[in-house]
Amino acid sequence: MKLQISVFLFVLFVSIPGFAQTAKFEGFDLDLSSGFMPMHTSSAIENYPNLSIQRDAPKDIPFILRFGYTKAVDERYTVGLSINDNLLPSRKANTSIYSNGTLINAAGSIQWLEHRQGFTFKFGRLMDESNQVYFKVGPTWASQNGVNNNGSAFNGVRIQYTTLGLGVKRLISPKVFALAEMDYARMLPTTTPKTIGNTPMTVNTHGEGYSLLLGLGYQF
Image (cartoon, rainbow, N blue to C red; front, side, top):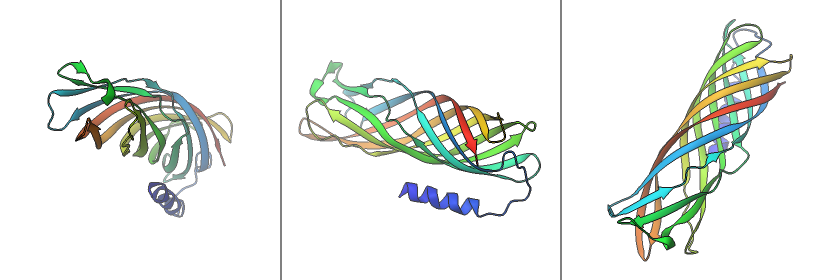
């Protein structure tokens, strides 16, 4: 459903008439970027203060494909909308649960994220005929997957992030461009059901992180 909403917004945006012609930056584009994306999360189990959770924080390597459209609003400013898909799952992270400092090995799990997709609004300003800086904001969704140490079914949920970013886009040729981008992502508070022993529990998680990306793209 989230992907359908993204596509609807994209089609709606492209249909809006433009106000000016900035031929070098206006139009459809496709880019591929990578870099590193460390995320730090914190989790707590509701109503069980004697239980604590520790999770690895591996440095993720994203591989993000974006398809978008940019429209000029005057001689220097542009607005844009893109649909984003991180083609790789996140690195796997070990999650351990302790009771008063003692490890409960059977309650632990290995977790990772897949299907990280979203859309982004961009607001750009031309610095000169070949360079543009931009600010971006938008939501991203991801599917939480995992394997419990005791072999029981993993109760994964859908996670949502809000992403803010700053980037630079440089035209290498009339059709090819390079980009550099720094993003900040904040994970919305997430509630996950979990059973330890025979007791159903609720895990509350929040997190944040940043990413540094470099990429190449093509303008149509």
